[in-house]
Structure formats: C-alpha cells, structure tokens
Image (spheres, helix red, strand yellow):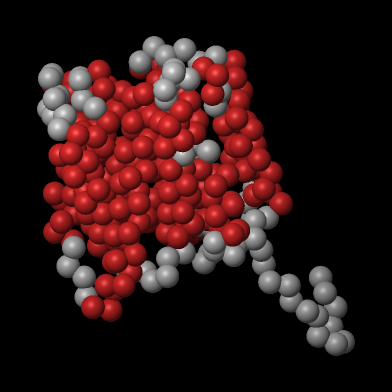
Length: 299
C-alpha cells in the first residue's frame, strides 16, 4: 500500500470520527424530547437499515464474512444501548470519556487477540488517552445506583476497539455496503427486541427539532461516518485508526459545551489537550529488516 493511499485512508477515518462525535449531542437532544435510551439506540440504526437492506444479497463465497459482520453488529447493538443508557443515567462527560477510552482497549485487543505488537509510539499514545480518560472518570461524582450503568458503558469501547482491529484488516474483503448491511441488521436484531420489551411511553419525537435530531443521529452520526470508516480503515493501520478516532471525544465535548451549554472543567480541557497530543505522535508500520548480501554495503 502506497503512502498516498494510507494518508487518504487516515483522512477518511478522521472525517468519520468527527461525525461519530455528534452522537452524544443528538442523543441528548432526543432525551430532552422524552425518548429513552432504547428508542434513541433503535432510531440510530433503523433508518439506515431501511436503505442497507437492499444490499444484503451475498454470494456463497462471501457468506462466512457476512456472518462475521452480523456478529459484530449484534455485539455492537448491545454495546451502543449500554452507552446511550449511560448517557441518560450518569453525567454525560463521564459516559463520553468512558466511551472514548477505546484507543487503549484497541492497543490491548490488537496485541492479545490479533497478535499485533504495538509500536513504542503506539503505546505512548494509548497511555496519553488512558490518562485523559482517567482525569474525568470520577466514580465519586456518580448519582446513587448508577454504578452498573457506568460498568455497562465500558462495553462500548471494548466493542469499538474490536471492530477497529478487525475491520482494519478483515479476514476477507467484501463490498462495503454489503458488510454495512449485515452489521446494521445485527444492530436491529438486538435493539428492536429491547425496545419492544421495555415498552417505552414515548416512541416518537414531539417536535420538528426532534425529527431533525433523529435524522442527524441516523445519517450524520451513524450511516455516513460508518461508510467513511469502512472505506478508510483498510488503507491505514489499526493503531492509527484507533488514535485518529479519538477526535470523536473532542467533537463530543465541544458540541456539548457550545450547543448544549454544558460546562467543561479544567480536567476535561486537560483531557482534550492530551488526546490532541496523542494524535500528533507519529504511528509507523514496522518494515521488514533486509539483510545485506556479502560484498555489498548497506546505506
């Protein structure tokens, strides 16, 4: 893979990260409309599913990979519900920081499950992200009875980290829209039963701004960034994809502060600074060492 293709892939991942960072903003708008975590999670995927359903047809040679994508979607559906439930239950900044600790988990999962030894720079970058997350994850500030919501929120970064590691180098390449169709159906297989089981009182937004928020979370914060990520991730390395994804945190906290009037304290601002620093640490792929032939000179 040439350097130009790698850079283009990183740009696509960065664009997807910025759009994914809008999720907490749209979710909190929908909470204000009286919708619960189960409906917000469902709306995020059910509208894209109506489009991607036309791309489910899969030739026999790709069906095993389609099944793997479906499993990723099912696991992700559980995780995203846990994340939105945490956003609704605990302080938003705490849930956001937990979610965006996934670069740390990505390095660990890549190392332990995918046998990708992280570079020294990758470890330093992950450590900066871990420090940033720890600055704002403060259990003593949690409302009573919300510990399990915080624990459930950790499913999201674990799942995102696994997806980044796998989708950066999938076992088999299949068309992007076909993969997205199966992942999205996996989400629906989890979130639709949850929504039915919880029997929410409010299932529709109560104003035009709520309808805009539904479209925003389904298209701007879900379908479009997922396409960008799946196009860009295979062109870059998994460590760089995970760290570039940390831009989501900056977007999430800034949109909350600017558009929703949420206050950012000193620790949260410090956390954002550390993550930006982590992004500037160059991630390099290990090149194979070439032994010099007898009688030749290495340059």
